[in-house]
Amino acid sequence: MKTIFEPFRIKTVEPIRITTRDERKKLLEKAHHNVFLLKSDDVLIDLLTDSGTSAMSTDQWSALMRGDESYAGSPSFFRFEAAVRDLMPFNHIIPTHQGRAAEAILFSILGGHGKTIPSNTHFDTTRSNIENSGASADDLVIAEGNDPACYHPFKGNIDTERLECYLKEKSDTTPCIMLTITNNAGGGQPVSLANIKAVSDLAKKYNKPFIIDGCRFAENAYFIKLREEGYANTDVKDIVRKIFSLADGMTISAKKDAFANIGGWLALNDDELAEKARTRLIQTEGFPTYGGLAGRDLEAIAQGLREIVDENYLAYRIRTNEYLGERLQALGFPIVRPTGGHAVFVDARSWLSHIPPLNYPGQALTAALYETGGIRACEIGTVMFGRKPDGSEEPAAMDLVRLAMPRRVYTQSHVDYIVEVFEELAKNKSNLCGFRITEEASAMRHFTAKFTKLT
Ligand code: F0G
Image (cartoon, rainbow, N blue to C red; front, side):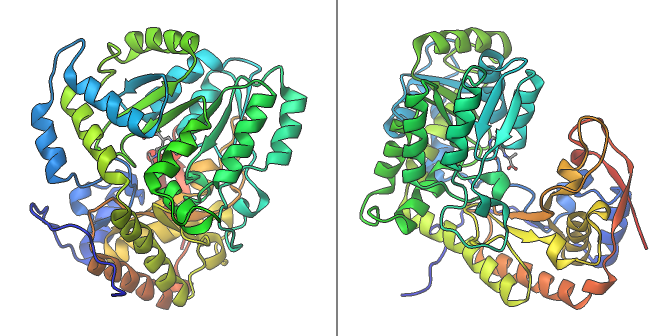
């Protein structure tokens, strides 16, 4: 059969309140044209993020009841630790309340003024935690990773030649090497096992710990199975184990590929580093057997990890975005090719070429998606990255709009509806206009900025 259907039945539903276009126009104006400022009840299809928005399974809901809320030594922690270690064989597994807390702890130890930390592309919270420590966060993704239209099966790969030059030049200031799988900021693109192995070899050669940001590890592993020679017959679970056996540690948000609504962890092999991390954890998150989470959250993560490596789920997951990408391309929308694991990224700068980057084409598309069809997407472009630490403003490398797919939440008819909304937008493309920012915060302005529409 060629139909890949949603591999689950629906037991509990969350009704969607249907709104009209006129209503949405007013709601958007009230939100100063910033979709982050909308109430989620006013959104029809919420593609703002795939983070913490997963539908939990019956087994996860059942596991919640087993949550043991003991302050220290809870059995829920040991079940969590065993489930993580089954996939990621690290010596020390340190729970945190979400991914950025793991990053904050790691870089409070490894960061600091004058330090330099390379990655393929740092996610914005990782970058922010590194920069906040005084260090610099450097992106060394392969050139193809910055070209939306160019096809490459592993567009998230780090440029290993550049990495080696970097390590030669900055060996004294580089405390670790990071790699984000999949590369969220670069379009949810995977990293090949060959690339992960090459980074691991360089890390050993230069005696640096190799830390993976593994938020979307299962999607990355499934892409390896589909696209990298020699893995077609390897279980995703074994690919996952292979990936993490090449690293010295990891940070992760359990809100992505652990099917949880909250959580994360930091894992390390080095005893001394782990000791420092646990001390910091106790200061900022909690005791090492709960780390900012309830026992029931640890149970949900443990069960989620067992479910995420199901290849029937992953086939459906990857196909959903591929299908959406194919339909959008057929309508003439330029997208980041190939489609990523968790999202479809539309190249708004290229599609809305009549809107200059400093009038935010990504924002224009995001606002139009909401007004036309009640779809909430996320601008990843000049609004997000345009303001520099010295106060100046520059166009970002790309103006993308991310349609991030929550896990196990929407069905194919929701996706067909999204396509229809884009079809409607295509008819009115020349009427879409840019925006000006009227108010913004001193950092991470995209969350709270207020906009005026330029007519
Ligand atoms: N690393 C990556 C690659 C991420 O995508 C995220 C979060 C984090 C770290 C931080 O994790 O949210 O649990 O603190 N990404 C979300 C997103 C917010 O929408 O892409 P967190």
